[in-house]
Amino acid sequence: MLRRLTPSAAIGLFGVGFYLFLAIFAPLLAPYPVFEVVGKVWEPPSWAFPLGTDNIGRDLLSRLIWGAQITILVAGAATLLSFAIGVLLGFFAAIIRGWVDQLLSRMIDLLMAIPTLIFALVVLSVLPTDLYVLILVMAALDSTRVFRISRAVAVDVAVMDFVEAARLRGEGWGWIMSREILPNALSPLLAEFGLRFAFAVLFLSTLSFLGLGVQPPVADWGSMVKENKDGIVFGISAALIPGTAIATLAICVNLVVDWVLNRTTSLKGGRGDA
Amino acid sequence: MGGPLVRMIAQRIALGILLLWAVSILIFAGTQILPGDVATAMLGQQATPAAIANIRAELGLDKPIPVRYFEWLAGAVQGDFGKSYTNRQDIATNIGRRLGNTLFLAAAAAVIAVPLAIVLGVLAVRYRNTLFDRFISIVTLSAVSLPEFFAGYLLIVLFAVKLRWFPSTATIRDSMSFGQQLYAIALPTLTLVLVVVGHMMRMTRAAVLNVLSSAYIETAELKGISPSRIIWKHALPNALAPIVNVVALNLAYLVVGVVVVEVIFVYPGMGQYMVDHVSKRDVPVVQACGLVFASVYIVLNLIADLAAVLANPRLRHPR
Image 1 (spheres, helix red, strand yellow):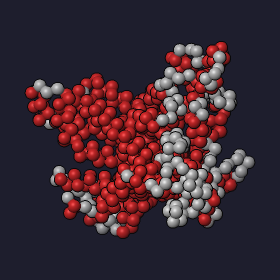
Image 2 (image 1 turned 45 degrees about the vertical axis):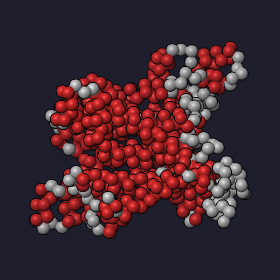
Image 3 (image 1 turned 90 degrees about the vertical axis):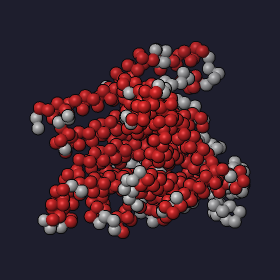
Image 4 (image 1 turned 135 degrees about the horizontal axis):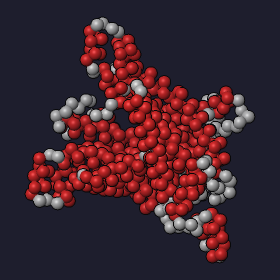
């Protein structure tokens, strides 16, 4: 497996691993408490504050590290939940077919006819702003895409002979879903998971940047950009640091996904182009 | 041409209208998820029941939800979105002005992005698998991964703070000449171009490459026609349908991406208006903006659909 590791995949894996490490060990790594004002406003980088301070004098590095935790936690939870909903409904529709499938598919089409950000704004205008609501909204909106792909994959698998055999054996749809279809749909779903996670990071950051995502004093990368954006016109680049973190995380996840996709297609005997 | 084509177009448009109607229900329902009461939210917890009843009657909240939906829809169809909760201004007049600004910004971005994406895509095919192709591929892939606000601030740092070429906030007024307005929106336009051009260019490249594998291209090659001529004269016209489709989809995306870009550059458009009123929980404004954005999005998707049918005669006769 390591032999097949391409340079871009190595960069991607390293980046994802690095941010995961930051997120998990945030309490040990952050040099200062996350909410505490420890210096002057927008201090330039120094030995005491490696990345400088933010708009009210908090240590930017510490907030970036804690921000990694919130960003990855919220985006990860939303992606997991969206997969739980989307895969379950998608597989269900593919096995049952008939009017249930039609109804579900048309409802998903309808939801997808509204741009995700616009629908999120509409819903968030009435819902309370807390992390659980945010995760639920993100997961619900994202599960439409997961439904589409998992239904498409499952429809192909559901007509195979071994599924027919399981049906004749009298297995229920729970068994067919988890034991017959899921193992055969795993690799495209895994790649999709990576893409959806990268998208969730971007989407969460966008919402937080607009002031509708993670609420202060808790910080994720998007809200850190929002807090520090006014410094930009004075030549203070504090807002660009969390922005860089978002962009690099998204790019690294994409690199890993590319690699996984190529690897699985070549395992199936397809032409995986490098 | 003639009968079946016209009928097909009419069918698609009818479907689009049906979809719009369903979307209006969804947007209205989306704001009714919470039983929470706007009246209480506006007056605070200490308000007397009489005051709350008064404001509920004034805003029409005492009627049942279906009645409110149809009143809202009837108004919206006639261009009347009611009044804002927070400042009591007429929503339609506000939206009218701002929608013009938003479409101006999106159009400026499209005028640059679409030709640029097609030319870059064709060039990437012409010089495929060379350093040039790889370079464009990496640049566009990273541009696609950039969040809009990061791209926007990078451009501000570079062009507004360091080089001082363009203003960092895009203020436009009616009194400004067309040229002045274009200058004012230079940076937001560039941000939008950066965000959409990557995707469009990659799809163009894929579409042209797809056509290049057909037999008649091989014939053209064997005739000794130059590679550039094959791509421009033989491959591109046949790749037009998927390209037109991608362009329309990206224009639809532009209209949404505009929301974030407007907030970055403090541009007086629909997006900023909507985001402002989401945090104020001003439901009628959010509903109206949501409906307008969704309509533009659906109409552009419909155009993509129709363009694909018109460009490809085979799609006109569904089997």
